Length: 259
Ligand SMILES: O=C1O[C@H](COP(=O)(O)O)[C@@H](O)[C@H](O)[C@H]1O
Image (tube, rainbow, N blue to C red):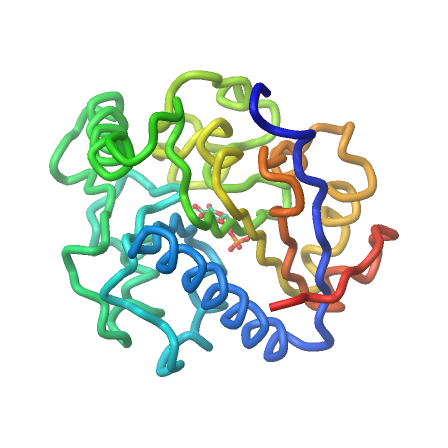
């Protein structure tokens, strides 16, 4: 990719317990936020659903978090009303945003109740991203300060599922699927070009149910599972935050987190 070095190799940080993991993740998020705020006066973040939001709860009440400078987008969302139990926004609100002083206008949900048509919904979210990023950066793709991803047991991340045609999307920033193998079937997702242009990408995975798939993703990336395909253009900026239960099977080298 012109202007960039080779894609980032993953940096695997494994912690002895989920508690140490969430504290370390909070310290990392605050570091990335500080760098972003120093450079541009704000922090742009894309967040996932599933188990990810509760892994951010060590941020609650932490000094150094500038909630009013966060601009939060979603890495993916299910096409359900925002107050539906399946909504990633609903989950993030319950687990995090309702407990911290973040202005409501700084959170950018994907609201399926406003637009029935998934193509229109993904186009409108892309426009929201263009509004946030386009004038600030002449790059073809938005550059999030940080994208936080979970990983499903099948190796999916955001709503990018194994074998799906969206894995080869090269142009769109935001896309939709109507056939997610994990319910609900209709979803909106950021695409690889957006994920891979972020300044930092961090996966978070805890528990033994993630051990087998983490081994495949890190030790055998040529299998092409969706989480292995995340390779940011910024070298050294792809992190895996896992606990020792999740990393029990992988042979991938561990690194110490420096924040
Ligand atoms: O369906 C989804 O699953 C992934 C992984 O969830 P997890 O509970 O296994 O961590 C999640 O990251 C994504 O946002 C969500 O829509």
